[in-house]
Length: 284
Ligand code: ZN
Image 1: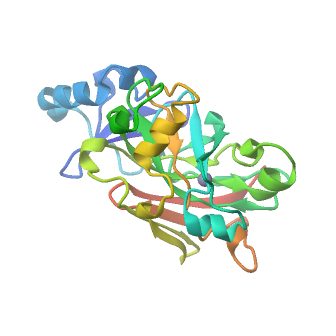
Image 2: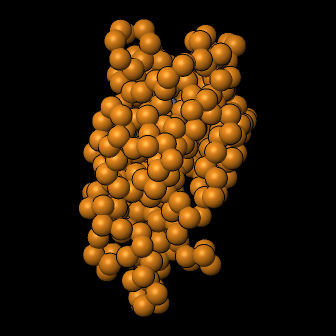
Image 3: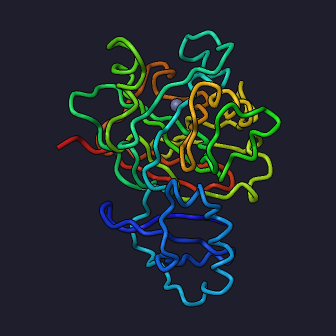
């Protein structure tokens, strides 16, 4: 199933894209895609509800804004330097254990919303990533059982202000958390439709020029390893997002380095999970 959310930022509603490509409004199901939805087998219950009600649901107008595919979760946990070539381009040694950092949940936006270059930013950069959406409470999860804790997958652009991330001291969170720095979606694709999350092509273009192009099979730590690992340090709640790291081709790794300017257009995608398009704008 492909779940999405739509509407203006303060009036977002749940939708479903049917296998035919028809996009329907499922507001009458009575739930949004949030922690309680995922905690109570929401995707399965919604699929069952649709067998009787899909034909009564209105279509979503094509000009509707698409929102983040999950309603604000308890946390966004990100993995740093999880592709060997990307680690090399940043000058870092590939990690022996996953590097974890947080991204503020207020950074979440829709997949095609403008990315706002923050006040006083000089190094706003892009990162196409596979995001995992957690389906049930996960604590001390064994590797063999890790895949049972997944609700689905989504496309994420882990926008990053490099000066704030790396030159201003301390943890990476300062460079990762500005408003609009986490476009998520268009879809949460349920895990039954993604047989192998570690074999997906992913790419990103800046103004039409392809700068990132890789496959999730290049990850140093794969999807089940990350879930099991993270759950040794914190409890993951239903709806939480894990962003699994970006491949080579970010702006700070280019020679010369390139960062976003107002008017730049960023397009990205992952096989089976849809595409995003953001236009960079100045903070006003
Ligand atoms: Zn990242």
